[in-house]
Amino acid sequence: MPKPPPIPPPLTPSKPTPLPGHGSIYTRLLPPSQTTLPHLHFTYPLKLISTPSPPSTTNTYQTVFQLTYGGGLVSNDQVHLRIVLEPSSKLCLLTQGSTKIFKQKVDGDITRQALDVRLCQGARLLLLPDPLQPFEGSVFSQVQRFWLEDEEEGKRGGGGMVVLDWVTEGRAARGERWGLERFESRNEVYSIGSTRLLLRDALVLNSLPSTNSQEESLCSRMDGLVVFATLIIRGPAFERLATFAKNKFSEEPRIGGRSFGTYDDGKVRGDSGRNRRDVLWTVSEVRGFVLVKVSGWVLEEVRGFLREILIDGGDVIGEFGEDCLLCLR
Amino acid sequence: MGEDADNQVLEAEIAGLESRLRAARAKLPSKTEVQSVVCEAVASPETHFLLLLSDSALPLGSFAFSSGLESYTAHRPSTSTPRETTERFLRLSVNSLSHTTLPFVLEAHREPKAALALDDIFDASTICTVARRASVSQGRALLTVHEKSFSSSLPPSPELEAYRRALRAQNVRDRASGHFAVVYGVLCSLAGIGLEEAGYLFLLGHVKAVLSAAVRQSLIGPYHMQALLAAESTRGIMDNALTVAKGIAVEDAGQSVPTLDLYQGRHELLYSRVFNS
Image (cartoon, rainbow over the protein chains, first blue to last red):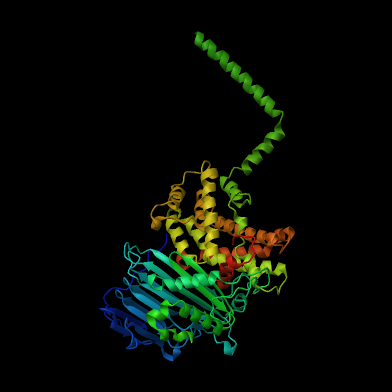
């Protein structure tokens, strides 16, 4: 039997736990349009720093940086962050630099990161972290769960979420290419009312030696790609972005015959004169979500591509300003 | 008295006929023996359905799909021979299948009653549009094959009937998609095919579909396809895939070869295409 669905974070903050790596954030809308942080709590090795939106903003949001000491997670670190976005509040969650995941020290240790986010009616979440960077020999598991209230019957509060989840090959400067031991990242979205699973996007990378000797190494399986990024878009607040991504994909040049990259028409594209980014990407529309998956041979190209989509798509900048694109600079 | 006499006459006649039958049978000793051997071979309905489900004539339209092979070859500069390309793709594809789809086949086989819940979870977990299309198309076809062809020969299945009804549910939330992996698992369980056999059968069907696509794409010839099907290395990767899939709960399924999602997702961008996936 499928397991019962997990439980969303409670609407009122529970007593802060002294457990290491735990944190919680509550955002609240002060009418007419100011988002505040009534509750912010964290314990080592997790650190949260909040900044309000620039004073000129009319419809304000809160920006929280999720930091780790030393810019990474060491073997067996357990980080668990719970967030509740109260009705119509807005939160932008960022990091400062990539999250490094260090080598496993003791057999059986797993470095874990869990994020539980509850989005009440009309709430808007932007999650734009820098990429995860699993080092050689690291064992990492990440689960990010999102509960949406807007899914309930007759409730369309104009909320939404944009979530970026991405992972790079490791310390490329030291010649590490997908040298990780095990890496797992799941993004799950549930409806609060029905507890139904709406979406599960899971990536499971494994370099453990299998019984089968003809199996390729993880690095070889990646075909030279250095990063995998998934952008999850949902909700009326980000409808323009979703439509933009879908249209951009449908306007991609056709791939002719066997020579990848040859275009069959000379049509001028709506890229406002920018050079075409050297990325491999695809868009899919699944159960009310639009997912953009991007990969490439150079991290900067993928970064630039994501940046262009988020800027040209409009909604994200409109809601959270240009500063939220920190990880894409 | 009269009745007794009649019965005696009848009994005598029966005895006579029986002795003639025995005599006639005795004249054909070898033939009856052969007959009984054949009877034993077809006696197991499980084996019978195993062979039916593995038949390429099963009208599922599986050969309209290349599981991403067509897009894969279009995206990768030909640094290796077509043969190596096919073999590598097959390995990657089976690896991916064992982490994403196969756990659902096995779970549906273990718990046919959970078919609709599994269908919904599979639908939420399968991101690639092209893969979703291929899965739904074959799953619905298999439901139809069950309804029109197998249902009269198999025990009644409330699960599959509810499944079929759910495809046309009025309420969007209750509507099932009819994903291939889930239908497959339930049907195999209904036909009495064992858990491992069902997983193996699903894998074999996938391998055959990929290799058949490779033949029609002129990457390999039909003889090499059979050689690959028969090869111990192919059985090795299938064995490995089944072992892996048995250890993965449906909640823990996930893409193990992310490049395949990208290649397959870009199938729609191919200028000309032979396959639907």
